[in-house]
Image (cartoon, rainbow, N blue to C red):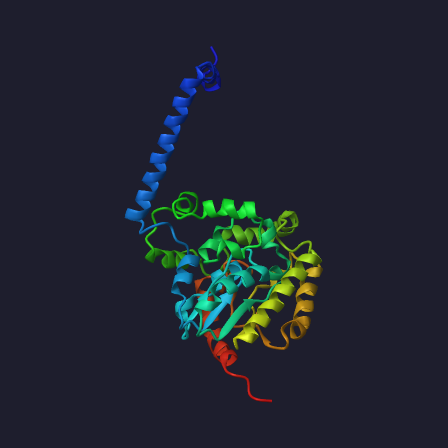
Length: 340
């Protein structure tokens, strides 16, 4: 006798039922789904303080007319910038796999809320030039978390209609994020995720990846910079130039920051990796009208291997070192330039 696991008797019996019975089953299923979704939302609102939030939503909520510095970039910025460690009002608005096109969208969405803004710090890295965040992304919930209106995202009308449904406050909590998370613990979790053992400081997974399998892995990964598309680089350079124009008109200083790295970071890149970044740096004066400043901490000796969770993402200790190194440089950058 065949196992009931592989029996098709029940589906066949269901298929033979009258259409009216099918309709009743569909109604029962829809009713169950509605009750289940409502129960989850109720748990959210009663036990979790409302729909789930992320580090990005909390950062946007913390913006005010007193905010003087904002940091833009990808996951490197999210790991490296711990706002309470800075002696001046700063906030980071990063997005994983972000690039300069993303930075422009986020900045334009929040700039009017920041009358006291003095400095914008953008990540200076090949990834910000070569990644196509808008092209490879299916879900744009991270934009919603950063307060970006749907109209500011350059996508087709059908996509905007779908995303408006996904981002509805009753729908998004059911699709994304953990459902019972007290808001105060979000910041604590950010720190806990970066607490790693001392030397060599890398997590076991990432360390093994970079030391043994990095070439095989990164060659297959379409997101990394093994192959560089000049068209994407051109789009991101144009976005950086528009950002410089926008900030110059508002009297806000633009700073490009090379974050600390370890030596293995450039190993997996193609020969174009360094050339793309060097070319962008050489063109920065022309692209920004000479208004941007560059701070290079890539090889800063103040950072030890134990300050990193991998070759480019800092851990909690590394974020503290960065704050101590960067705070005086930011005060200097925010100071008005002397007259010629």
